[in-house]
Length: 418
Ligand code: ADP
Ligand code: MG
Image (cartoon, rainbow, N blue to C red; front, side):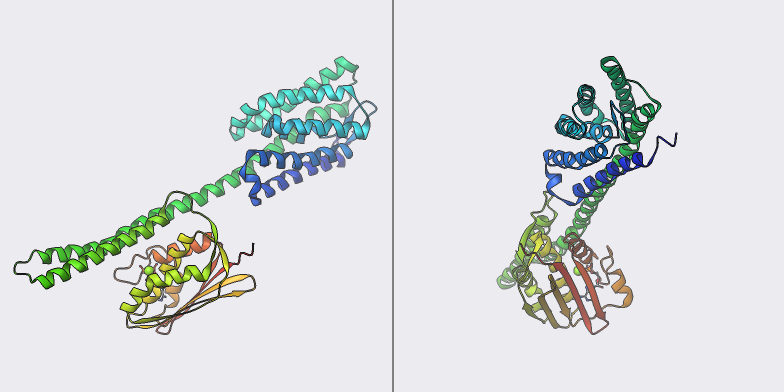
């Protein structure tokens, strides 16, 4: 037995496994291959034709009438998973390379064309199976095809079945396929699970946002309600009435703005990812918090250097709006708020520095934790949303804070050069 399962068998298996890993590595990391099924097929053909050729170049052994190697494993895997679109190019490569290396052989053509037709016909049904059935069916199919090929060879060419043939051509390939399909399914599951997880996380942000919207909206509504009740009072002077109406209208405007702001962010449609200038967008956010800063006698200064980053502009606005609001709220008796941006080693760094109440060690650790708030009417959602956004933009956030001295947040994104 061990004379047949030799180093060459292991080498053949090794070529196949490495190519499967390369396929998933490329598929996982190169967006081009995820776009269309056609691109995925192309990757499959390239990744599988390499072990196909290597198996034939370094076979298990060469007899006078046939060459034993595990070429049928990459060939069948490609045809099973990719159908005729992958199987046919692999068939052509297989036959061409076989004939270039070892000369023309009629049985090889018949055997592999038969294997191709049966497998390609079975492929659509195979791809609908669950993991366990895929394992069983691919193993059985390979075994069946090996037996069928043997019969074809015996009928056409009076082929002699040797012990090595039985092991290397009939028994090892089904086991190899079992092994390879198992690895493919495991890798595929891992990729699917991860993208599902990301989706769940995004949904979570949306639902947590809903909670914070209702909170943010309730405040102006409460104010409006109060002034409406005041309007009911008899003997109200015209002057006070106009004042109350103006305040109520102002609050309604604010509620509208909040809804606009949060709803553009919580849109179910995928966010547009684009390249934008940090300083330009930061200025817009600073303008949004200016009225609030003025009310708290907070002086805002900025020192912005331009640079491109990639992400959703709405997310970016939301993120910095939340962070700047916290800074202003940390200075109820006024103070200094400085926003700076600069470029450092291919990174765009944004610093938000306030001279507010600062945070204790525990508060720093809990920064970004949902519903953690030290404010009477806090939602504890602002920092969570901001952190999640920074995370999805592949950025980082560092906190440097001292109680009663102030807080400095340092946010780093990678710079986009294209
Ligand atoms: P909220 O503002 O509704 O309290 P956040 O999630 O925005 O919720 O902030 C959570 C907590 O983090 C705040 O209650 C505050 O204690 C702390 N915090 C955030 N930013 C600052 C800051 N710049 N200075 C001091 N404390 C801060
Ligand atoms: Mg906040």
